[in-house]
Length: 508
Image (tube, rainbow, N blue to C red; front, side, top):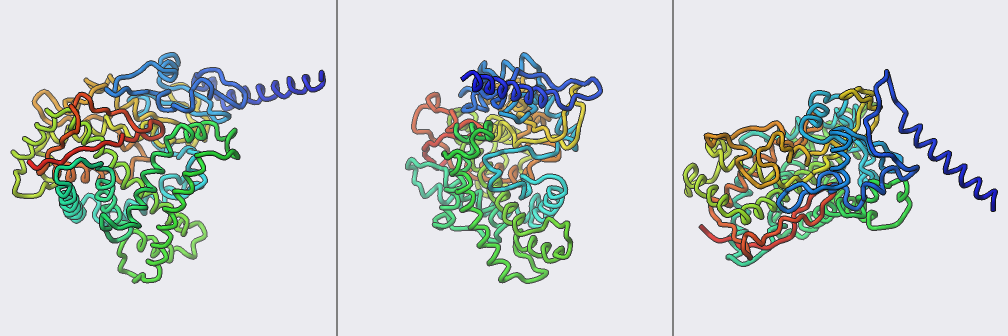
């Protein structure tokens, strides 16, 4: 018994010593590591951070977007905007506020350009695909993806026409609800997804296509599942849970089914490929694979093709459709804002033609409303994790290479030093005293720096054209008094998912 007790004490001592060595590792030139709370062996700061509410630990937002005092806010106030926490045995650098995040991602862009770990998704991506790749693989895939997206019209008149056509198809579906209550989730997902589908697959889908609807269901469910409490626990305590069964096992299954759909499309494209006449992103990638087949260092592989396509399809659908769902809720909760958008649309566009991108410059209020919807939606509040690509001294602290980084986008989008009304839905956050649109460097829903979202330009076009087309023709009518509408997210973790709700679309 005494021997067992001594061995247990010795093991605990060695684990504590190992953790202390890890925490002290990397001190260089007299520069300390960023401060942070004391950590326990193996567990790190998991007990202090409440893994089931990861985001709320960093910056929980109430329904009115006001800050709530939590452990993570207390950490930020105690240790400053740059501090360290330990997720199990994994060191994580946390950045809070506009100044710290911008200094890292923009002023030190190369050093903070690495992709950090997201354990719930690693069994699917294994560092492949443009979003989760690093190093030379990431550089090759990003450069190629941007080039192809531009070739297929991103930021050009051709993609604008495609969005306008899809907006009219969506408008028809909304009118067909005949003022009856309905949930807009899948109609918005269909419309938005069809834009990215036309680029990556070369065609759009009918809104009642069963395979398409199943794909969207898998996407919606996996987007929610990533932010469930169990998934948050797994992301924070992977070393303790990696061999345990549980709900986190559902995520790779759903993503795997989506990948299987993409793999079938790749095989179909390969069988009918016409050299020199690419029909879509998949064709372009296949042609580049053939071109580089003798290059041993090429990253143009079948795995990167399937997973990059999955990245584009997923990101190109879920973020914009979720923003529109939040936007509908916010406009119903603030009917005076909806009315002012109606007035500006009538004055600038009228009722006899479809909205066009060239209208945006003459519609400062509508532009400000869309920006405010994105700011308050705050869909990826933790940001996709980054990591530092080399040892760096940042704000007087030494950050060792490969340290994971959480640049908290939520703390930037609600930073009181740069937004006059950070905790309320208020379009004047993006308007000057004369009512002109005012840009703000802290508007970072697409992140910033070298990992800026590939589809930012496309998403901005979609949000403007879809929203203006709908509000030009229809009025969003809630099923209850506006003050009773809840903006409380369905799940609140790595992502912030809008609640399910119903509304009526009333002709204007």
